Amino acid sequence: MRRASALLVAAFALGAAASVPARAGLAITGVTLVDGRGGPPRPGVTVLVRGERVAAVGERLRPPRGVPRLDGRGRFLMPGLMDVHIHLVGAGQWRGLSNPPGVEIDEAAAREALRGYLYWGVTSVYDAGNDPRLSLALRARERAGEIE
Image 1 (cartoon, rainbow, N blue to C red):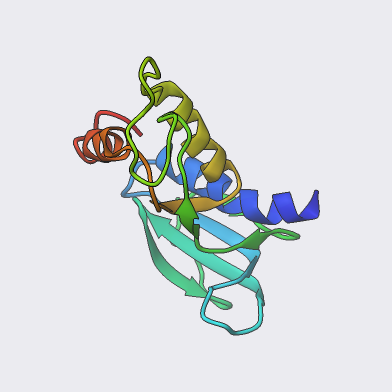
Image 2 (cartoon, rainbow, N blue to C red):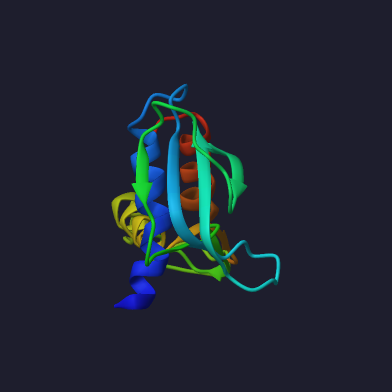
């Protein structure tokens, strides 16, 4: 349960940031930061988020007045994880093979699987082999802002 809490604080924080106007931002205070650069975790850090970007990080950082705060004490914050070898469900095949006759592409199943990755803190995936009609179409729709 503690591991899930560590991974989910990042997703929760970004969700909270998305609901706050970009000019106001969000301050996550007192969190333990795992920055992904190989150093030890940094306890008691404040992270200031503006829009979709981390604007500032520091142990002595004081958020500007009026910026909403999220108490991160007892929680961990880390960058999104990457899974660089998946075979996304929904195409009925993998390794670039065509679907068997009668097996349709199931975009809804693929999108549900991708939401599952986000739940566990995985923000980037590489589909190492699949029917390109699924993966390339999903990528194009996401880039066009049609799906989240």
